[in-house]
Amino acid sequence: MGMGPMRIGVDLGGTKIAATLLAPDGTERARHRADTPRGYPETLQALAGAVAALEERAGCRDAAVGLCLPGIVDGAAGTVRAVNLPWLDGRPFATDLARALDRPVRIANDANAFVLSEAMDGAAAGAPLVFGIILGTGVGGGIVADRRILPGANALAGEWGHNPLPWRVTEDGPPVPCGCGREGCIETLLCGAGLARLHLWRTGETLTPPEIAARAQSGDAPARATLDRHADALARALAAVVNLLDPDVVVVGGGLSELPGLYEAVPARWGRWALSPAPRTRFLRARHGAESGMRGAAWLWPKE
Image 1 (spheres, rainbow, N blue to C red):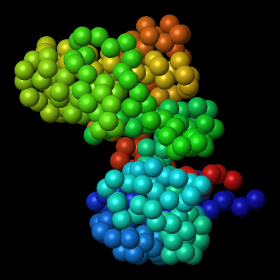
Image 2 (image 1 turned 120 degrees about the vertical axis):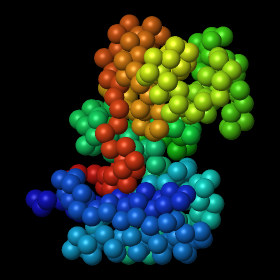
Image 3 (image 1 turned 90 degrees about the vertical axis):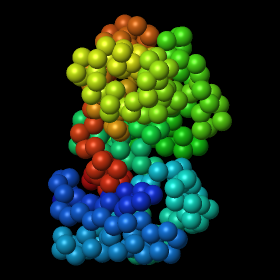
Image 4 (image 1 turned 45 degrees about the vertical axis):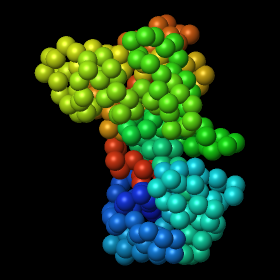
């Protein structure tokens, strides 16, 4: 039995391409970054260039290639829909990329790749069922079971941010419209803009999430109270996930994963709302951070 393949993971974002080459044991051998070009043939060319550069640097060929991007990946059709990469819409992207690279390619949503990365060798390593959440500009998520992504029949598995915030109270502020067309979604309160909006509504003061966090850490009572409400809403939203999915680990990434007190407040509260008064589910900060997309993309080819 050989060591298994070298793996390349590519994170195709709206502004940059970040790629890594992993040895069979998961250690990084090489890394590549480039700007994302505008246009379809240019993007295929840039991705082929990234793979070639990594293989040259690591002295290998025929690495397994996985790619993730922000958008809906229809694995059956081999197509992707990405808001910030509109030139990919409706194209046979999987087929064309495989042709450009002269090998099969696996493609996933970037939130799903993030969860896979953390389940393979990150904060949730070894956990059978992992729910990953990204708290940032939006609120995304994904599910990994036995180190495989569960994409779902409609490629929607893990999109918890577009369910209504459960057990809503006055202190959460009034429901606001969401980009998805409904109002009162989990995302509208728990994302970065939602945290800033919550603080404005509670205090009349306009602050960014990092400013709110810094003030809370320096002992500012109103900022602390805002973070407390935000954590309470997060605990309620995740209690519904615990009831439905009952994951071993909930792993947290995105800009708001650094909020002070988050990893104490949420597990201390979610038992009030979940059917288990003291869930054994662990609530952990992601280990790989911004690298998790490309690392997860590499792991789309499972271990031997």
